[in-house]
Image (cartoon, rainbow, N blue to C red; front, side, top):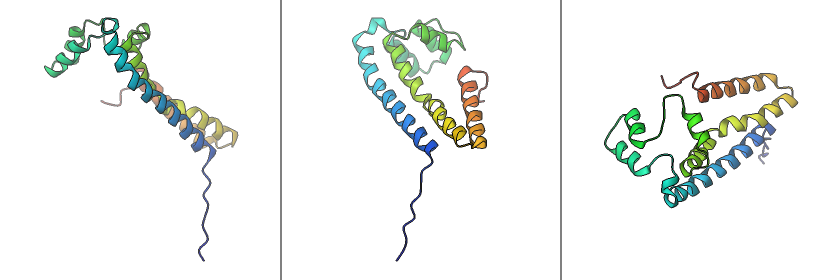
Length: 146
């Protein structure tokens, strides 16, 4: 008879997965609800969706799309622009998208905490290094796209 081997999942992975699951679920719910608000309150949007999509389909460059949309945007001003307009329908949609992108960052914190509690400092250090890379990329200080 073959013995079945039971594998134990490390607590850090369970916490990481649990946080990632719930943040992704919330982000997806926002992504489902936000377009309804965008369509219900078109005058409250920061960007006029019909103008933006028209400019995209014409093949305009990003700077020309922003100019067409009427939003006061300059490169590197993304966070300030959307934080000031967070309560607009498309600001709410952007919050859902950003939350979805931040899932890795937010999920690392409970995992790092478990690594530190279990005195697995190498894994905690590697995780914090990845967190630092994510924060630097989000801030615009490093650009991994080239």
